[in-house]
Length: 532
Image: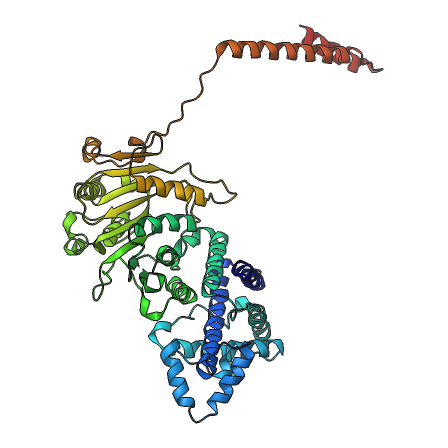
């Protein structure tokens, strides 16, 4: 089966699984059930395939044959040695009766037991710190699943049966990962504003990643950091554009626990080995992280919550992330706090790309002082204005700010990409053609009329360090001059046509008759009004 076909089949199965839950709860809730159970199937199927490979050094024909081989191997005297070997490679052990294959069989035979599935979740969570609390958002006993034990159990069994149709045995990792990514995008579309917590539209992710990785595509051991990682989709884009994808190291932090769990699942489903992922559940601004081992990165990618509130406590003025600037981002707008956190963790040779509201480009007071310091230090490399209504959680236009740690110049490239989009019913979208056009403007780094302007430090200083894009890129489209003679001619033709139609209409009215004197009187009055 071709990858694109298997991808479509996989998406279709998973989406039907969503239908089972859609009538019972909103997308922000049922995504946790669906994605969590898909992930358990992935762990179980991967486990059985690995077991079979260790026993026979080949891929099994089916998951059932792999399960039978596993059961037989456990009766052998070398069973403990096999278990140790599996644990070393997979980081977890699943007992035969707790495999997804077993659960699917029991669901089909109407003897599915929720307690066993809960036990399976618990075992995975306790097997390695990698999986700690991974399934906490899946409440198998929730009233949302149905009224009473039987209906709740039936709902979970129906979901397990449907998802079992997904052929993970013959699906490449990228196909599964992309199907999962597609589902996350669909949930984002359904949840609307809540989606901002976990999802950056792929078009924006592509632009951010292609900019940040530019010139580093061949680097082996490339490190990428997202301190507001959501579901991890933005981080994972580095894999698509690196020429050494198996060596990319991912560092990410996320405040929302359920979203952090989603990111961990997403990493595994994209085939990222545990050694290459360092993820943390925590508040990025409250306390710096990471602070040991690797602390600066080749790429920093961010789509933080816009104008979020933060404490801005005076103590942060001594924090190394912010101390060079003398002021803090205001309590009501943490945008620059996120930006400075990311910049602090950027390698001298790296690139950072962050999505922010346009206000960061021109607001004054503390933000103005921080912006001026960044410009004087040559940290701001480019500013790109995006189209409005690209995001699920806001319709406001946003911009990408590109930063470098150390460079010779202090010029800034301004790009106005606000008109590069296709209009959609709910959200606007940017096609690959639009994205390529933005990347070309970025790489060429030169002035293009109505699209880009390479501003010198002196240009920016003259503008009092205001970086509002229209100050540098004039995209005003002059309206066509009106030909007055042609307009007068058209007006005369229109008047003549109105006069002709009125005449025809009046003739028709005059031919009307009625036996009622009142109606005749009214008609005559109407005729007099039209003639006079």
